[in-house]
Image: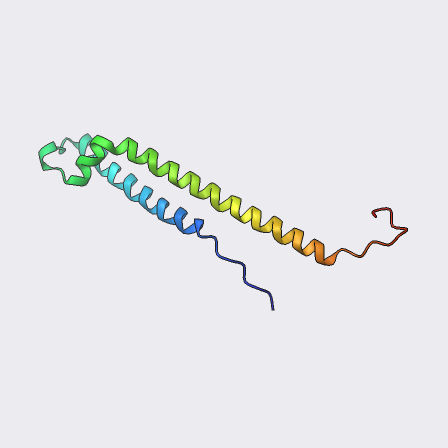
Length: 104
């Protein structure tokens, strides 16, 4: 029976960062639509829309940075594990070297 590979926890971080980014993008879209329709009175906005109006681009940049780094880390960890598994399986399946073997 084959051993189950360990989980890559960076994928969970990618999913969480992607969800936060999607939520921020939707809220930013609401802010934009309200502004274009002319119903955007700064006194009537909620705390989230006020925060996005002041700090939205920094929030987007930070979320993109976390999302990019988490995706890179997930891919790098998968590649490293695959390379280790390939090297380990090659070490077990290599035939023994003989004295007349040119590889020896």
